Image 1 (spheres, rainbow, N blue to C red):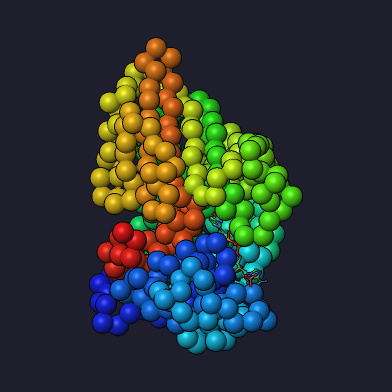
Image 2 (image 1 turned 135 degrees about the vertical axis):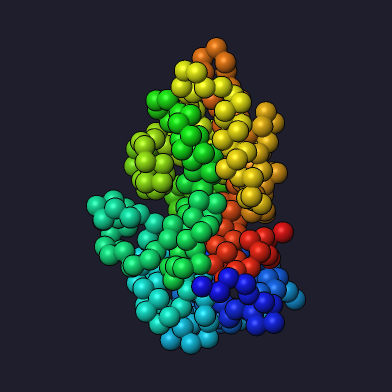
Length: 335
Ligand SMILES: NC(=O)c1ccc[n+]([C@@H]2O[C@H](COP(=O)([O-])OP(=O)(O)OC[C@H]3O[C@@H](n4cnc5c(N)ncnc54)[C@H](OP(=O)(O)O)[C@@H]3O)[C@@H](O)[C@H]2O)c1
């Protein structure tokens, strides 16, 4: 596998779902990316050509209606920012034409067939060589994969905080993830729950024991979790407050050491220690900020993990995966 890429021959990239929240973020990163050239950007099939107002004078090409043949012939790497059921159909078709696919949907994240049948019924089969696209965990597997199922937004924040502790045996008993997301997490089409007059001035829990991201978190951690998402009236950002207990004999030094060693070479994870992170410090960035406090008397740990759902939780992580997969510096186009 050739790992070094040069900017003289930028990778031709396509974005499907380019008119959605994460699709526009992808365009914003890719247009500045020295190793990529946007060769195709597409909305839903049959939609008329549109320009992206927020990218005027930065990237003025039209977004066309989706056409699989054109997408496949014009791009070597394709980002799918599509509804799950559309990705479920298109991703394997692109892979079979030799394209590298970075799928932002959940269609291929779950490896267990029963779990996939429950949460993503449109993807009964898992194409060979799919890699779960949490960059910090699967960095070494990305270059060899034609289909990268980029990690979900809530799971990214939860897993980056918890994986080092679970792997080091520093969690004793239940894991409780109290998660809060801005409204853009639900995509651009308003629903009764997400339109302005419903969510403005309010705060609500939803999906308790019935959110598909719990399955994704449990898959990667290998242990059960209690995951409670909340909708908060901000446009973007996720903050998760995570409650776990340290085993007897372990200490705060062990927690710090596990996190520091896990992320020593990870440019987008910032450990803030006792200074608990905030959404405004990660908004519009690809950073995941993780802070923690420990009660020595009760051995309880409270971790706080923050990301921008549209960036590290979606488009930014997809570009980070693209960078690793194509042998670029992991940070290229993302700083
Ligand atoms: N929002 C987040 O924070 C977030 C985070 C992580 C992952 N994701 C995942 O990323 C994907 C995109 O999310 P989003 O929030 O960007 O969604 P979105 O804002 O609703 O945008 C959806 C995009 O898909 C296009 N589309 C809709 N139906 C289509 C069809 N049948 N065929 C082809 N294109 C179609 C839309 O085109 P038109 O404009 O023409 O309708 C639009 O470009 C989803 O799978 C989502 O679960 C989202």
